[in-house]
Length: 311
Image 1 (cartoon, helix red, strand yellow):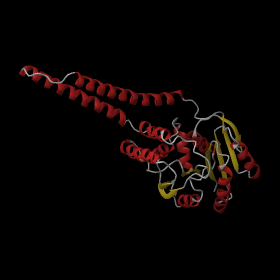
Image 2 (spheres, helix red, strand yellow):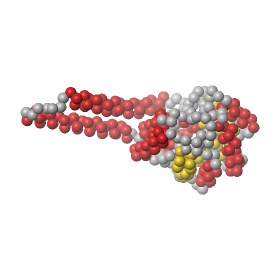
Image 3 (tube, one colour):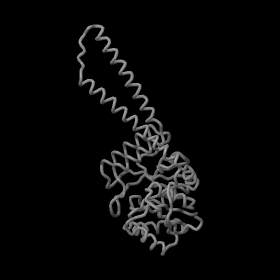
Image 4 (cartoon, one colour):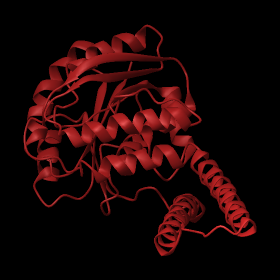
C-alpha cells in the first residue's frame, strides 16, 4: 500500500519541521511506503529551503513549486494529480489538521470507505465572525446545492485512488474540493475531532472574505438556485407594482386624495434599484465562472518538481 500526503504550503517555514516530526512516526506505524508531497506557492521566506533540507534526509518527501501563486485550492489539486498513492490525504501543515488523526482515517479507509472526512466539533482560536460565516454558509449551500457537503468539514480528508482520479478528471477551475468530492460521491465516513489552534504564525487565509469566497463557490458552482431566486423576486416585485397601480387607480376613480408622495417614490426606486443590482451581481457571478471555465487555462503551472520521476 502506498499512502500519499498532500500538504499545500505558503510561508510556513516554522511549521514544516514540527509537522514532519509529528507525522513521520505516525506514517511509519502505518506503512513505510508513503510519499509526503509539499505543494508550494512561491514563498518570500525559507519555506522552499526547509522542504529541500528535509528532502535531503528523506527521499519520500517531495516538492511541487509553482511558477506563481495559484492559491491553496489549486495547490491541493496539483498535489492530488501528482500523487501515486492508493489513498491520498490532503491536510494543512499548521497542525490545525491534527496528524494523529491520520491513523484513524487510514483505518476507516481499510474498512471500505472511499472518503474519510474529519468533522470539526470545536474550532479553537477562530474568531466568531468566521464561525458565523462558515455555519451560515454550510446551511445555505446544503439547502440549495445539487450535492450535500457535510457541515464543519474542510479540505482535510482521505480519498481513495478512484476518488482522486475522478476529482482530477473534473477539470473544474474553481478548486472547491469539498464540492468536487461531493459530486464524485462514493462511500463516505465522518470522523469527529476538535480542531486545535495553529502551531505557529498567522494564517495566510483571509478569515472573512476567504470564507465568503468559498461560500460563493459552493452556491454558484453547484447550484442555479440564485438565478431562480432572482427570477422569483422579479415576479414578486412585478406583482407588487400591479397591486400598487390598482390601488392608485381605485383612489383616482373614487376621487380620493392620494397621500403618498416623494418619500414613497424614493423608497420604491431605491428598493427596485437594489434588487436590480443584486440580480445583475448574481448574473455576473455565474458569467464570471463560465468565463473561467471557457478560457480553459491550466489550473496551475509547475516551476519545480522534486521527487517525481515520471512527471
